Image 1 (tube, rainbow, N blue to C red):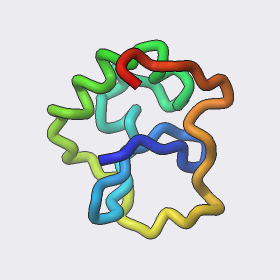
Image 2: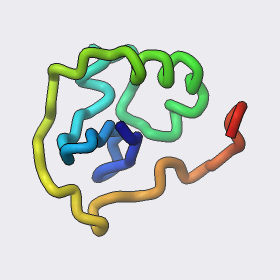
Image 3: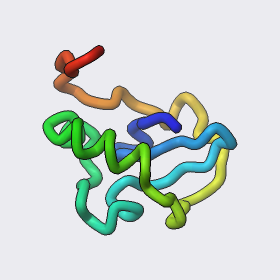
Length: 80
């Protein structure tokens, strides 16, 4: 699973192309802003590894033109 910015919202993209909105799947624990996830990276990464993603937003081909940078304020993450 990979994190991405799709149309300005944080999403997880599964290996099968399934797109899951982070804010919806986490019941609001994490917001829609991809940049905010980096401020909560440890908690987000732990949630993403173990979350039962059952709130699939849509299964689609995301298309490169709809994907954006994950953050407009990149920073180095621990262990990266």
